[in-house]
Length: 341
Image: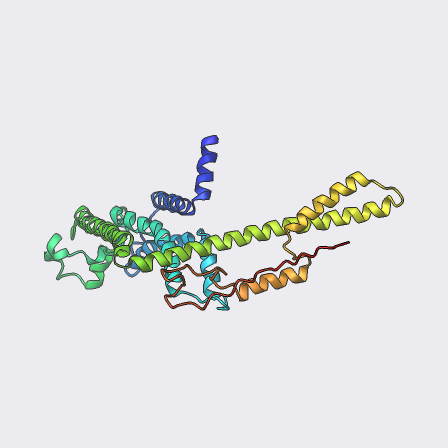
């Protein structure tokens, strides 16, 4: 249990590692879901392609949305995108970086689903069984004697072993091997292309836009840390506010119930505890002021400029321009009087 607790604490302290672990779990879950899924092709012309397309595209979309929902930064991105500008402008590059970081992790599970589906071949077999070249793989002598709709009806039954009755036209095993070979080729091609794309995005892109990448990464981390610290400060303030409110209530009830009895010791200790908690309130001691503070934080966040002196350059002043004349140093004169008395 101690090892699991240490791992959990590490994942909580490292948000990126935690999200990578969640994405890995979702990727494994998607592969397990596909293996447990009972794929049943309708084996009907016009329905095979729709059913296979839904199996290939709908679960990846659901997994992608789940990946975004499970990411804690999605609410932070929406808040940063919709907040009023106020004294702090919005940087579209930072918003794009935040969304791309979340999208990259959320796409892992859908990519695994699509890759496993193509490598398995059942979905591709169901979707394109009517497109098998009968003239090249089957008995082409019977094709001119059959209507096109009859040929399509026979080919649509290829995925269903129990009801397929067109071996005299095209052997089912030949068609299955042909379509699965194409599906696996597409699957490995998809895996290769997604791997190359991930490599280009993660490794090559920062090399060409390193300054912009570092800037977006820094301010993205700043927004995340600022939000966490603000939530922690609000939590501490709420705890202190509740504690002082409860202490005041108990003191008032104690004063009413024990009127005329004095307990100097405990009262002094309670007063010291109350003063300590009041120091955590930062002067916000009523509900209206706190609501105004929260509204102001949302509508007009403070600018990203700390009130400090600018760094000095070689000439002694920031910006390179000569500074003003130094102010004269005021000397305090002390007069001493001696009495002759």
